[in-house]
Image (cartoon, rainbow, N blue to C red; front, side, top):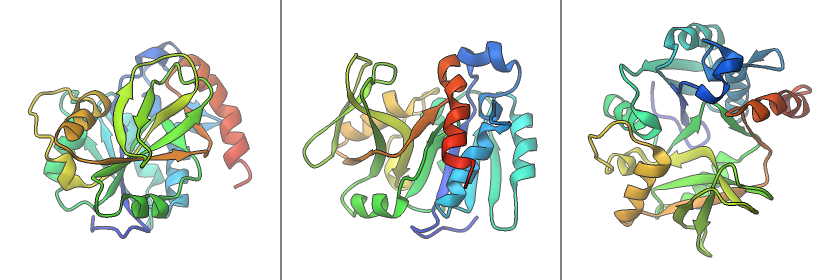
Length: 246
């Protein structure tokens, strides 16, 4: 896949998790393929990416990879290319991205990373790229929530530069949406060979330790994840509200 412009960045979707918290509902169906409003959740992620003018998508898979690969084939088109990259063993969200970059050094810079079980609607990638400018290694889309206790929060200064991830605590805060923009050359400086690695707990803290700057982009855009039974149950109404008439 060739490099993309800021108006059509490449996207990497992390779709290798086991989905243990909702396994009693999904069985052997991987979490990104959980049915939401009559279609796999990945369908709605793809629809959101198309709305962002993204046409190059990489799915990083592991658990029940064959199912995800089969579904991806049904979603491919001449103007929406999907490649599936299967992990031989679980590398974690951060480890899988680093391994991917070793294999795909020519991906667009920056490129989009998002979790295969969450979605942020109506975020503006062009604005995010502009906010990053030349000084930032990456950007995290944050979501303002009155109750951030399930997610933990992002701490940042007056320039909206990330200073730390905070543990889960009751109260309002800006949470990590699981949607990122990063320059691949910056991520590759987190060169640990350890696996698994987490984006939030390992990769991003290591970049901060190296003095790299990561921009926080607080969004008021609607957000959903399907990581728990409760949030999966709410996702159908979310999709109906934001996609049914689009």
